[in-house]
Each structure stands twice: as C-alpha cells, then as structure tokens.
Image (cartoon, rainbow, N blue to C red):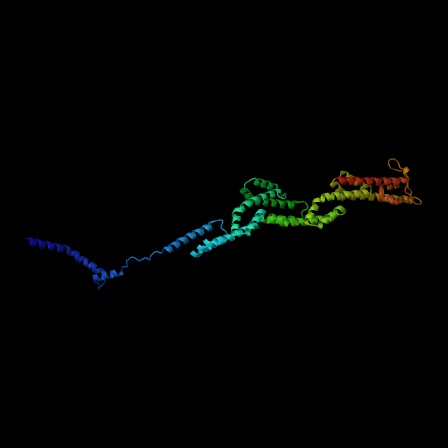
Length: 450
C-alpha cells in the first residue's frame, strides 16, 4: 500500500514538471547560434563583456596642485588690476599679455612687470599734467621736480602733492578769471561764487561749468565783432562762418583768427585817417607812428583817436579863424563857442567849405564892382574916405563898395591896399587882425583846459 502511494506520488511529480522542462529547452535552444551548445554560448558571452576591473590612478603631485592654485590666484590678481580704473594704458597692455601667456608670464608680471609699466604710466600722467594749458605754476614746478627724481617721487607727486597743489592753483586761476576784464560779467559772477566753495566745487566749476560759459561768451564775442562799427565785410563773413561751427572751432577762431582780422581792419582804419583831406599835423604824426609800430600801437592810437582828432580839429579851426574871410571867421567862431568835438568836425567837413564859398562869392562881387567903378572914372580908383561912412556902415555915391570891400577882406587883403590906403581902412583891418588874434588865444586856452 505504501509502495503504491510512493509510486503514485512519483508519477504525479513527473507529470507536473515534464511540460516545464520540455518547454524551456526549445526556447533556450532557439536563442543559441546554430551548432553551438549552451556551455559554448556562455563562454562567448563572457568574452564580449567589458573589463570591469577598476582603473589604476597615478599618485597625486602636491607640488603641481600648489602651482595650479597659485596660477589661479595670479590670474585673479591680474584681473583685479585690469578692473581698477586708475590702471594706465601700459599696465593694461602688460596685464592682457600676461593673461594670454604662461603661468610664468603671469608670475613675472605681478612680481616685476606691473611696477615697471606703472612707473611708465605715471610719467605719462605727469607729462599730460605739464601739457595742460590750465596747469598752474605750482603744479608745474612740482611736476618737473618729480620727473627728475625716482619712480617713487613720481608716485608721491601724483598721489599726494598733485591734489593739494592743484587745489591751490585752481583758486589762483579763479582769481585771474575774475580780474580779467575781457570776460563777461556772468563769468565773473560764477567765478566769485565758485571761489567761496570747497576744493571739489572749484574743480567742478573749472572742469564742467567754465567751458560752457566760455563757449557762450565766445559766441557773444562773434556777434559783437560782426555788429561793431567799422567792421569789414571780410570780418563779418568770417565771423558768421565760425558762428555755425563747433565750440572748439569757435574758441580757436576767437583766440587766433579774429585778432588777426581785427588787427588788419585797424590798420586799414589808420590808413583811412591818414588819407583824410586837410588832416592836421598832430593827427598825421600820431597816425604815421602807429602804422610803423606794432598792433598794440595801432590799437592805442585808435583808442586815443577821439582825443587826438579833437586836438587836431581845434588847431585847424583856430587856423581857419586866423586866416579866413569874414564868413569863415563867423562859422569858425560859432564852432569854437559850442566847443564840442562834433561842432568842430561839422565845421571842418562841411561848414568850412560853405563859408569859403561865401567869402569867394563876396570877393568876386567886390572885384566886379571895382571893375565897374574904374570904368566910370578917368583914371585910377576913387576911394571914399572913412569919414564919409554913416553910422550903419553905408555910404553914398560910388565909393560905398570900395570901403566895404576893404573892411570885409580882412588881414589877407591889407597888402593890396598900397600906400594910398586911407587911415580908416587900415585901422579897420588892424582891428580885424586883433580880433583874429584874440580868437586864436581863446581857442588855445580852450584846448589847454580840455
């Protein structure tokens, strides 16, 4: 019974496990290459697997690691130098070259190269300070002294002395601007306000505000030059052209070209004075001296021209009063009585010619009258004695014209009266000469008082 149960259990187990064993075998056989057994496939699979054994690393080099760290620190230091706005051009170029080079290049730059490049940059900075036209005397003296010294002297000048000396020079420059009369009142006021500020405020005024004010003043000068009395067409054209240019070009025109054009115009003005008809000795000599002198001499002459012209005109009017006829003396006396530069100039430019024309017309009429009187007589010229003249200066008969002519012609006709001139006519002529002398004396006194 027991044996039967054992056999039955064995048959049951075999029946259950047989499909699994027989089903798996074909599947495994299908995956194998043809003619290859299971053990062979396992061996082939083992051969195709990568070697999974751990790679052996070389031993670490502490010196190399330290060098790499040091080079990284050097790079960081060089980049910081490049980021510093105070670094000059030479330092920047050397720093860029070191960064692009080897670790030894970077080490050499930080140890030696940067200091050499900085010293060269400092010298360039000092030279720029000297080249600045606004640099004051104190800064210039200290800069030249630093350049003659060591690199440390130059460094000290730039970092310590320059700020202090520049502040002093800035205040001196402000004072000079205020004292310069050629600048506008607006500039003077702004400079005074800045002078009461701090060193930084003064520096800001000189570097930022002053250039703008000067630019505006230069444009105003151009307008003044174009509208100045007597300015030439060439000056006006050049000034108009410059007015439309940049501030820098205007500044150059005002500083360089405009003074030359004005100097030429001034010499033309002096030449025009020399060409005036009837110019007096005082004005003529002064004009010739100016033309033979410098531009400053010409300017000084033109500044004194109103005074020189007044003195010259006063002398010419006095001479005309001394030697002219009745109408000339009358007009000259009126001009001297007014005693202004304008009255004298009007007399000399228009009044004198008109008065001379009247005197000439009177002389011509007198000559015609004398010729008619002579034709009526038998011989010679009949002169009516002075005793026959009436109180109002008129006479009766044909002798009236002769007496009036003798009295009106003045001292310049005394020589033509001859020895036959009546005593009354000579006395009248002598009186006229006395009056002329008195007029000249009065004119001389007025000139002295002026």
